[in-house]
Image 1: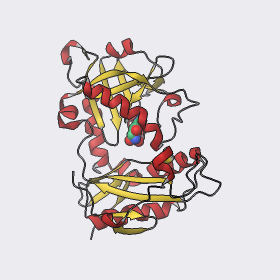
Image 2: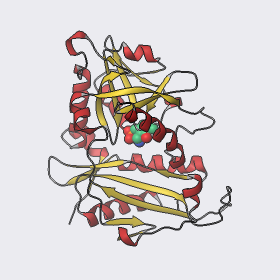
Image 3: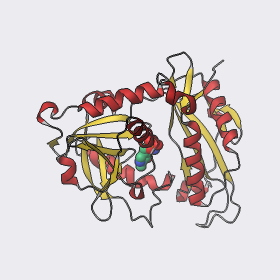
Image 4: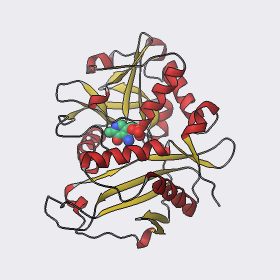
Amino acid sequence: MARGTHVWFNGQVVLEANARISLFTHALHYGVGAFEGIRAYKQKKGGGAVFRLTDHLERLFESCKILDVKIPFTIDELIAGTRAVCQANGFEECYIRPICYVGDGPLGVNPGTTPPIDVAILNWEWGNYLGDKGINEGTRLKISSFIRPHVNSSMTKGKITGQYVNSVLAKREAINSGYDEALLLDAEGYLTEGTGENLFMVKDGIVKTTGLNSVLNGITRRTVMEYFKHKGVIVQETRFTRDELWCADEIFLTGTAAEITPVKEIDNRLIGKASHLGKPGPITQETQKAYQDIVHGTLPDYAKNWLTSLELK
Ligand code: PMP
C-alpha cells in the first residue's frame, strides 16, 4: 500500500509529513466527521480517471448536512483538490479519501454554533478490500453478533466517522472467527449490509438488494442498479432474512473498495446452485465484468458522465 507523499489540506496541497492536527481536535474525541471512499482507474484510452467523483462529493455534503456541519468549500473546489492531490502524487489508479471533521476548538460535546471545520483529501494505492482471492473465488461471510443501530441512533445516509465503530467491531469479530467479512442485521433481525459494502442476492432469476432505509446509499449499488435498468432488469429493493440469503442462488457485495465481490459462503453454508456451489454465479460474473468495463471507460454510455479525467503531468 503506497501512500501519497502529498495531501490536500484546507485548500492547499502540502507534504503529508507537514499536515498535522491537534490533540484538541473535537472529532478525535466524539467522531463528528464524514468521509468518502472513491477510486481512480487507469483508462483504456490512456491516463487515469476518477469514478463518479461528483456523486461521492455530493454524498459527502449530505453526510455533513446530517451532522449539521458546514463544509467551507464548494463541490468544484473539492473536485479541483482531488485532481490536484492525484497529480501531486502521480497516481493514475488509487483510492481517494476526502474527510471533513470538527477541528481544534472547545472540547465539550457541543462543538458550538460555528465550530472550526477541517477538510482533507488523501490518496493511496489500495488493492481490493476483500483481497484478490475474495474477488476471484468469492468471500466468506459471517452474520455478525453486532447489529446496525436503530435508524434514529445511526444515520444510515451519512458516511459518518464515529458510526464506523460498529463496523470495526463486526469486522474484527468476523476475522477473529476465521471469516473475511461481516454482515449486519438491523434491530428487527433483517439483513442490512456489510461493514463497507451493500448486499445483493439472486434467487430464481430475480435480483434483490436491501432497501435504502437501512443501508448507506452506495454508489456502486447505484451503478449496478443503473446497469441492470439499462438491460431492462429491475432490481427489487426489499427486506430479507438470513435463511433467505443462505438459500440464494447467488450473492455479491458492492462497494468502492470491494468493487463487486462474489460471496461463496455464509455461516458455514456454501452459497449457490449445484452448478456453481461455492463459486461465483453467472449474474455475479457478468456484473463484475460490466463494472470493470464501466470504471475503465470501455462502455461509452457510462464514461461520459461518470469519469473525471486526471490529466497527470
Ligand atoms: N455500506 C457501507 C457501510 C459503506 O461503508 C460503504 C462504502 N462506502 C458501502 C455500503 C458501499 O458504498 P459505495 O458503493 O458508495 O462505496
